[in-house]
Length: 471
Image (cartoon, rainbow, N blue to C red; front, side):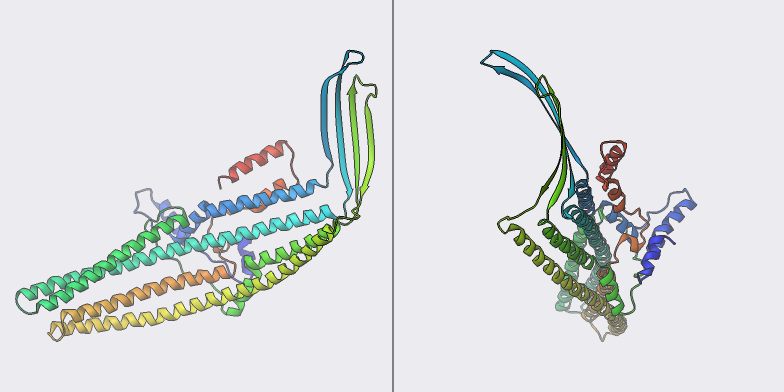
């Protein structure tokens, strides 16, 4: 078993496996080279496409790569700096009416020896910012996955509702033809024909409504998945979920990006308090310079010095900055408390929506069964002349609405189940087991953490960044 799946299992919930729906078409394709019928697009296909093409994910990955550079910049403060300055020219003396050419080259180096811990705190803060960026990436990934799932389920639902609407329209069309034939021989009145024709018109309007709704869902699918849908396969079994709401809450409080983000922000706020205090401490630095002076009486020079500084009075600005950092640290802790409440609420809401959807499915199934029995009985009675065509259409309408409600309830159950997975922070490509090559944020971080210079390693990094811009 891959290590990432073992880790997910240790987190308290077995990973979801959507791979059978993806592997089966590949096996079938390898058996024969003969032309095969169009393979239906699976939920796994849609999620992989969304993971690979989502602009939101690409933007967040680029943002994270920018956060990686903050660590390199913070580490650079530990290293010496070297600057060069050169000048050349002509100096004219009016007293002697003589020109003197000069050329100078100055090299200046400096190194911070002690800054009250500011540099170390800045490095720690930058690394916390990288972790924050990774959490934001997971949060964005969850949103992309949920958006693709919702678009897929909406398409499946709307296709089913359109099929039901077309069937209802076909039934109404047959009833209109039958009632007109009966009207021609004088068995029914004109009023009966008008009532049945009105039901046909209503069924036709529902077909138009479902066609429009399906087209809207099709465009939403294109935005969420990155391509227009083809023939969609039935979704796989629902993911494994905790048996109790308490277990779901525990997983959410551990894994949800909102909680993890709030904890990191508390850490960053505490570091900012420490940095505000460090700004009040003395600083010590080492400086050196080398001057090369051509055609100058002073000749070449070299100096080395140790410099120190300490803030004595800054108009109250430093103490104000400290108080502000302390206030923001308190806010970060309140935000963490609020995040816990929101995550818990999200799990409870998702759990309730799933329970409601499942209870609704049970009721809708009974409704469909009862409507089918009623329709059969009314048709039998109509054949004996004790029921009218309008009675049959009424029963057909009740069955149509029951089947529509059942399809909607099944859609709601699927969305609620994956919504609960998202509420626990587990709706990711890794946990779903999509079988797609996962984006590795650590790879770029390791390349830039030490701030590579213009070298072979630096050129390799440039190539990696160019490729990353296309992912």
